[in-house]
Each structure stands twice: as structure tokens, then as C-alpha cells.
Length: 409
Image 1 (cartoon, rainbow, N blue to C red):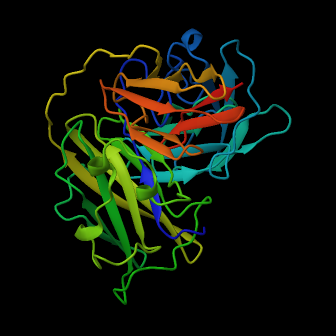
Image 2: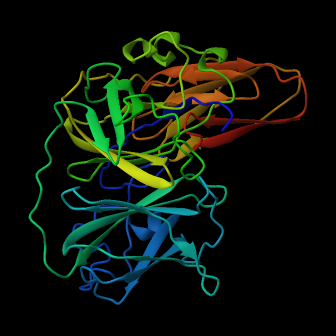
């Protein structure tokens, strides 16, 4: 990684009766078994299968998973017609990520299945250490589609350990396997309000910044956030920026600037031991966050528990699209429309309207045009430019999960 500082954009999305979409919205709430089958490990189907573009069929071998015994887990991606989808995008070096957690969020595993040549399914062997209820979040992105996350609940036979209550941390400082990680919110935690979570990693023995962090799945860090009731979920990866944040044209510099004055070593340039997360917590709730780093070829998962109180109510304004502008709606389904045709040499006006917070569209980036603008819920944001040559101008959300393009003729 050429630039040592990594900026991460995270939008934590709320889950309702339908929970599928871009940037981390989880699958349907299947409290016992998503398909209604007696066997908890068979063919989990979620979110009203006929209404969604993609779903996961799940099975295990053996059919009953037992604590302490290796189990083969199979995940098959299906499209709306029921055909197997074999061609998934490689996102951070893997076509599919699995986040496995126990019901009380005390156990956390991040694993990656491999595709099987014979049927296109994805397989991984995993051993659940205890009996009880677990949830598997499957994260994948089909070609020419947005990120999909589905939730599968499984029941593991065997002795169950005592449930561990989720308790908010009073100090955001943890030491795991010789790595000390300090988390500093940029402002007071409140539901529905955007902020940054600043992380610094130190060597626990020397107390010095841990500048020997290694890339994990192609990036410096990964973050997973899950609410106590497991309705809110996000799996976010760092996004290395080829240019500094200040080099982008911003619609609100105050909310996009990254203030390092709250960090140790204020005034110094960010180092490879510093990571930032831009996030929004949608509800008043307890959330558990795992920050994953790799050091000395070992992945270290550092947990934090935060209590998020209720925030102010934001009034959603109707879309106000200026004459001559093309409206682009931003939602969990991505950018709609995601493709716009224009003519070379003629001014382009795009009116972005983010209708809710249940998506990662907190900002839109036109990297080729050096334009980056904040998209607040219920506000219409105008992007204007004049293309000087024919071709394609792509745009994306800050996490690069939702994508669109302007075709210049």
C-alpha cells in the first residue's frame, strides 16, 4: 500500500422486515429457520425469495452440526429465477466473506469459503466450539450488482456455555495479543448522527505506534459492527485513497474533514498505525464492533461495545430537483438510475437524493472529475460538470459498493 493512511467509510444500516441491499444490510430475520424446515441447517432462504434479485441456499454436512466437530458448510448463490450464480466479484481478495457470531456476540469468526468446481457452491469447514444458536452473515457481490448480505441462523448441538451479557465499555482501549488499540469517537455517540471513529494501534510492550501492521485481505484493517438484537450489521473494509481528502471538492468541508487533533501526536502526519471509520448508528441500541488487524502474520480481532443513545429527529425533505437536472435516488438498491447518457461539451446536472439512512450512500465520488460530495438524508445535492471528451465517467458511494456511470457520447 503506497499511502500509509487508510480512510474507511462505514454506514451502519437498520434492518426492517426486508433486509437486503448494498453496503451491509443483512438478510431477513429468520428467528428459527429461514425456510421453516425442522432441520436448522438446511436450505436457508430469506427475504421473500421471489422479490429479491439474489439469495443464498445453505446446507451443512453433517445435517446436524455438533459442537467441537468439524462441519462442512455449503453456500449456493441463486438469482431470482433460481439459477446458480457462479460469477461473483472478488472483493478484498475473496468472492465471499462469512461473519459467524454467537447469539450473545461473545464469539466472532471471519472465514472465507472456496468455490466448488462441480456445482458452483462455496464451501468452508468450520468447527463451532459450543452448542447453541449462531448467526452466519454471508457477504458477496454478484457481477453488475450491489453488495448482498444475507443472514442465516443455525442451531449447534452440544453443551452450551453460559450466556455473556453485552456491557458497554467505559474505556475505549483494548489490548489483544500484544496489540493495544485505542478508539476515539470524533463526537458524542448519538443515533442517526454521523461521526468518525479514530483508531490508533500501539505495541503493548513498548507503547510505541505499531507501524508493523500487515495488510489483511489486501487492506490495513477490517470492521464489523452488529447490534445487540442482531438487526443492524455492517462489514466494512478500508478504502485506500490515492489522493488526500482535502484534494477533493467537498460540499461540506466541516463534516468531511478528519481532525487528528484528538489523536496522540497531533500535528504529525498520519501513520500506518492510524485508521479512521466514518459511521452512522441508526438506532438507540447496544452495538459490538470488531476491529481486525494483522500483525506478525496473525489476525487480531479487537472488540469494543458501545451504547448509542437516541439522537435528534431529522425531518426528511421532499426531493427538490432543479430544472434541467437528472434526479438520481440513493437507497439500499443503489443509485437509480445508475446509468445516464449525456453529450460531450454540454453541461451535466445530476441531482442526488438520499431518501433514507439504510444504505452506504453518505457521499458520492466522481474520482475522474475530482468531485466528492456529502449526501445527507432527505436533501437534494447537485453535481455539475461539463464533459470534454467522449467515454465513461464512473461514480460511486464512499465505500465503492454502490456504483453508477455517466456515458458521454
